[in-house]
Amino acid sequence: MRALTSAEIDSHWQYDNPALSEQSFLRLAEENPESRDEIWTQVARARGLQRQFEAAKAALEQVGEREGLVGARWHLEMGRVFHSSGDDSAAKPHFEAALALAEAAQADFYAVDAIHMLAIIAKGDEALHLNLRAIERAKASQDERARGWLGSLLNNTAWSLHDLGRFDEALRLFEDALAFRREQGVASRIAIAEWSVARCLRSLGRFEEALDRQKALSPDDGYVVEEIAENLLALGRGEEAAAYFGAAHEALSADPWMVENEKERLDRLRALSQA
Image (cartoon, rainbow, N blue to C red; front, side, top):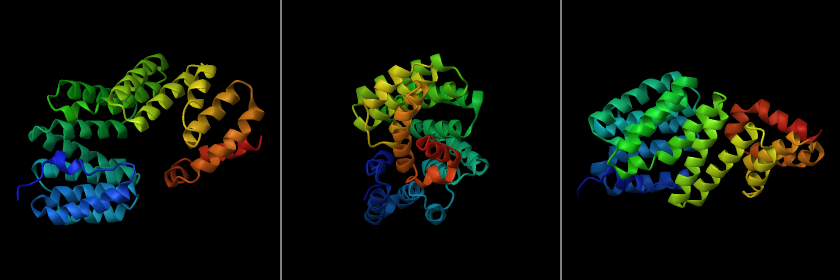
C-alpha cells in the first residue's frame, strides 16, 4: 500500500469532536502502517485537545523525533502540548524546529501553522509581526490548504492589533476575516468571526451595535451571553445585565480551561450577576 498524503490524513479530523477524531486516527494507523508515525502525531493532537497532555506526550514518544515532514508535524504537536499545558517557553523551540523542517520540505501549510503558533505564544509587536508574516506566506502559496489559513490568520492579527489598543485597525481585519469565513460558508466559523467583530465594536465604545450583533448569535454560547451582559452594563442597564452575567458564569464555569486560566474573570461574572 502507498503512504497516505498529509492532506488525506488531515481529512479525518473532526475538530469539534477530538475524542471521535482520536478513535478515527487510531483505526487509520492500524489500516495504514506505512503512514503510522505521521498519523500518530494527530492522535497526540486529539489527546491534547481533550487536555490529556501526558497521553499526548506518550503518543509522540512512540513516534520519536524525526526529520522531514513527519518531523515538522511531530514538533508542531509537541509544541502544542506544551503550549496548552501552560509552558510556552518549552513550546517555542518545537515550533521553531517545525518551521525549519516544514520550510525544508516545502510544506507551506505546516510552515504557516508553525508561524501562526509562534505568533500565539508571542506578545505585542512580535505577535503582530509573526501574524503578518504568516499572512504573507499564506497569500503567496500555491497550496490551497495554506491559503485556507487566511481566516484564522486575519482573526489572530486583528487580536494582536486589538491587544495593542489599535481598535480601528483591528476592526478592519476582523471584518476581512468575517468576509473570508462567509466565502468558506462554515457556519461555526462565521459565528466566531461575527462574535469577534462585535467584541471589537465594544472596545470602540459602539455598544448598541455590539449588543445587536451579539444578540443575533447563539443564546446558548457562554461567550456570546457574556458579551451581551458587558454591553448592557456599559449602556447603564445593569439590572438587565445581571441575569446575563449569571448565565455566562454558569456556562463558562463548565469549561475546564476557563476554570484553570480565567478564575478572576469567572469571579467577576458571578459578582456582577448578584449586583
